[in-house]
Length: 265
Image 1 (cartoon, rainbow, N blue to C red):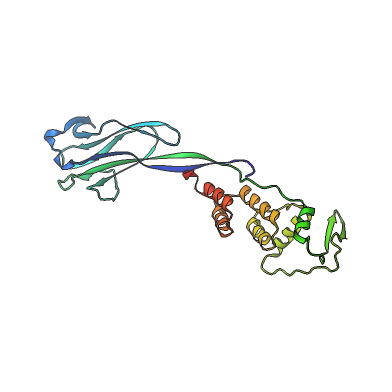
Image 2 (cartoon, one colour):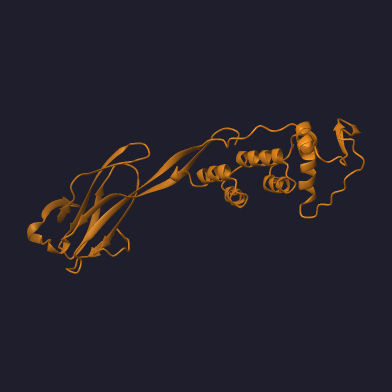
């Protein structure tokens, strides 16, 4: 993800439209209007024209709801809404249970009805590239890590030629045994220390950060975070988020949150 990440997600705007009838049990055949439907006349309770604006793109929607009954023994709900994907349901007497809009028995125990419409839309989100810090070149890194250690001896590899460099008047070679990381991770850390780059990083980003943190190689840590942001996807983002939390990487944690939960941006 070397450029801004753009992706689409299905988002539900809950209770986009809402209409409440607080005195539903008071409606009788005598005080309801009639409306022709399916070659027959139905008794009807109609909502006022409702207007709502999608906060994401500013698009305005209008809707009306109708409660229809042939004989006041059963009722069903009809909706007049713009072309889109909607989810309709209703609640009875402030009971939170959501009822689907199908035919239902009309009883005087139903004193209040609230009808809802959820708007279901696809949203496009953009997550900017994680801001990386400039890497420190190899000479500066070695100087910072070992500037006070006169016993360090290391090797520089140029193509097929390798030679020892004793820029600190080194007197001994250091031997380090690493058991808590896979061989491939250690090899990639050494590759980075030799070349300031790793050719094949995919799948090793988290372990590279952890080994860089253990041995305090700041620019490898930055490199690993950058690669995590470039290779982030829905399968690994929560692992990256947990790593950011564990290692107190506040900027990267914030970036992961935006990637993982784009609808809250």
